[in-house]
Picture (cartoon, rainbow, N blue to C red):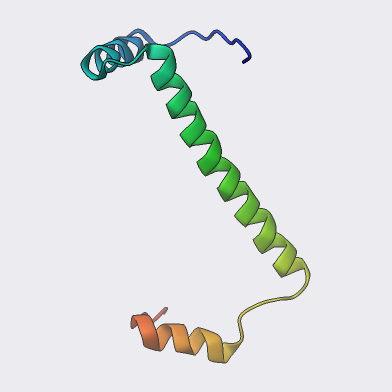
Length: 79
């Protein structure tokens, strides 16, 4: 496991300490959980953006019929 240190705003450090105490977990455990969730979410989003850009570069866009079907399904009218 790698080591890392960081400076936290006082209020955030206090909140983390209170949460650690309330849950019986260490501050390190909670920080690792939070960073892991953030990295997973951001990695997913970046991958989806790259996928969308690749589809756009390939000219893979929704047809007018596909857009109309979505409008009909969701009742959305852009205008």
